[in-house]
Length: 110
Ligand code: 2BA
Image (cartoon, rainbow, N blue to C red; front, top):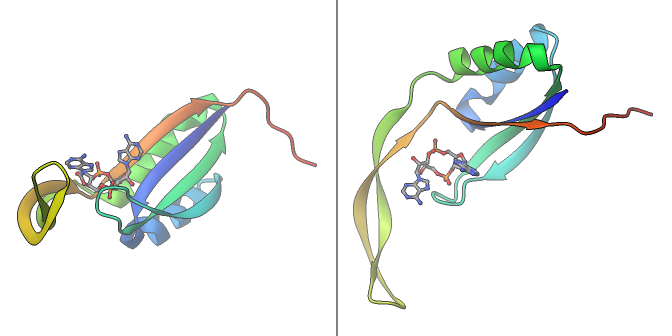
């Protein structure tokens, strides 16, 4: 058995969870925050059999769409400890999903 962690954008959460549920996957949704942008995102925990992992990733991929490049204004850091309150436009990629697949050592339900 595997546990998939899928970090998706808030905008995509509804579509992804609906599509996964329709296909028989069990999901736990956690409201999370990205460490870099410090904006809300959603982490889905999906426990499933090994042979169903690829299908789950396919569904997530098709619901989350392509990654896009965007510009964000990041705080401009000058010197070792001095934070200037000016910002600097930085290009980053957002969208799609970030997925981790881990082995489950034991799975019980009571
Ligand atoms: P955030 O940490 O808020 O990152 C948002 C986007 O900013 C990232 O998109 C990436 O394009 C960029 N970014 C992140 N860290 C960066 C850095 N140190 N320098 C330059 N650019 C950086 P994604 O890669 O699509 O990640 C979306 C969210 O997925 C992340 O939100 C974070 O919550 C999670 N994530 C991504 N990679 C992860 C990892 N290796 N471990 C844990 N969480 C991860």
